[in-house]
Length: 331
Image (cartoon, rainbow, N blue to C red; front, side):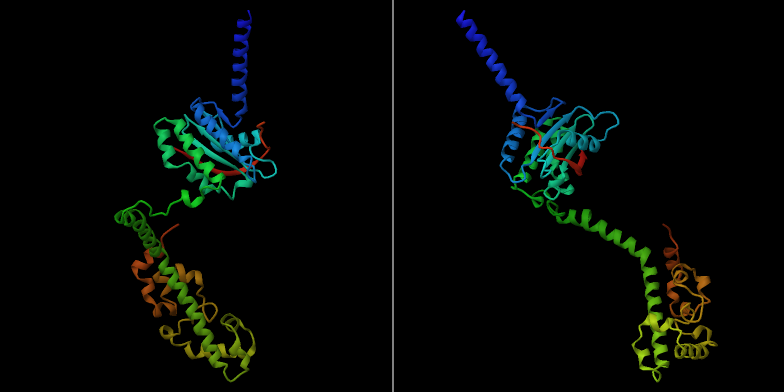
């Protein structure tokens, strides 16, 4: 009888210990049933070490077969994070990693206090290609273990963003660098230049004309008050002072009858005409022929430039909270 009681005592004790050990690992919710006992314990041990760190971070993992109806991976992760209260309440130092197997989605949700340690770009890099390859092979346990180890390395300070974000040319041959990196950039710049080069040149002409008008006004006023020589381009061409008005009249009288030989600035609104900057930028050749600027820079209105410029348009959660920082990806 004593032996029987002893045997049952051992069984009950073993069950009690087993339940207690399982219950102590609050850091993993494996609803998809894809994680091994080793991976779960690994995550638990990470958290035990975090208790000694200054920010006392907490790291939780939740696996789902699929996301609840109407929920995105972002909304689910944020709500779950705040429901659990992952991370120390004082420091908001929590990290939650969620994976939805059938949806092929994953997300790292980061508490306010860790957003400098794990910015969004780094959170994306922590879910690296090695882990995604494991997920494609349906080895979810190995993939989660890889991401968890990456997160742990950052939380413990063993690695930083530089370790997870190699240069844009890393691992590429010279030919790949040219064809996959530099080539597309040069093509894009060429297309951009084709669209904006003519308007930029016209803008330069506009500024050049303003300056030329200001110079001629000041030349007419050189025997007047010396203050006019100190005026800015804008101030002198918009001045309504009598000496400036007289200088304007003299210039207009000098060039008024010349038509095509008028100065570059003559037909602009700030001088003696109706040409605005907008018209200069977008008017076609036929309309521009009545302005003096056309005869100084007629190359701006050739057929090719016109077409380009006319185009388009015990363990417990610490009470931390998340403001939505982190990153999501699929595989």
